[in-house]
Length: 348
Image 1 (cartoon, rainbow, N blue to C red):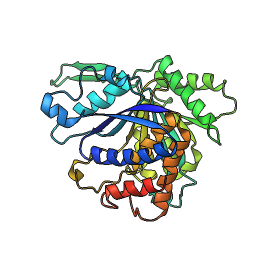
Image 2 (cartoon, rainbow, N blue to C red):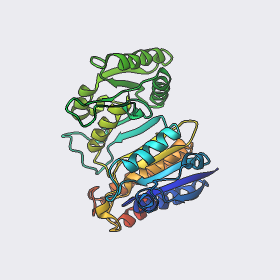
Image 3 (cartoon, rainbow, N blue to C red):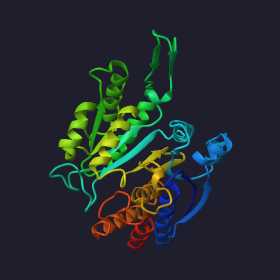
Image 4 (cartoon, rainbow, N blue to C red):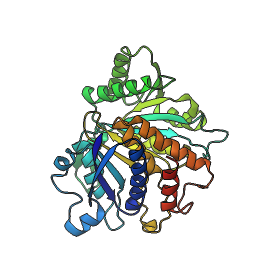
């Protein structure tokens, strides 16, 4: 099978980590006889500074012809924060209807966690975050802006259609896991209307999945249990805003941004895969950034494309690389970027 992959290396250390991801993907693709046809796009901060646009106006049309998108990192020190993120990240998520943000929270061997007495057996769950609604829609505005009586509103939008397709995806995912447990995380004791909708849809769809054990946690309690008892969780489904927050907490419990990968999923369309870390401009070109998160994202990409054995091989190689002890920590300078990619590739 052959796949067309759009590569957006992005800003800062993005090109360096993408280079290593593609190195590993090349080895695993050869092993499994998978064709990966890459096309590179220079979208990001440098393009914005040169042309005034982060990506072309027909970007969605261009990317619709690909099977997946492999993204490095975005963020440029000379571009006002928010411009690239809104135009590229949110633009692609909304434009390609990538309505699921998939964030595995998994502690690998030889990776330190700040959680006392917790190990890989305790931290292994997945967060399913709704990715195209909530306050990210951008509904709202100002009245009397700049005056003493200024009012600003930012409206959280939830639709039954959007909530149901996210919840159903989460139930389907839970069915593939040995524990078959799904936890709804919300704030329905305070956010009465929108989260009441989430509660009702969660229960209604759950009737179709009697094998899945249902659980519930308010988001503040969820943050507490993610630290105290992460072993309680299997699959979590939650709103866009809360998912944005708790997944960064989850990333730190699994060892930090250097290992955490993310998928922006349209199950019937074009999905995008990326590390969750930023572009780290101060490390650009120094060959010191750990590429494991990007390599991990490449494995996720293969898995979602249906090449599950190849995706598992990538994760297994990451685990073997960590078990060698040659990657002493996941920060900058732990092991040269290219050497880390070589090590993982050698263990496919």
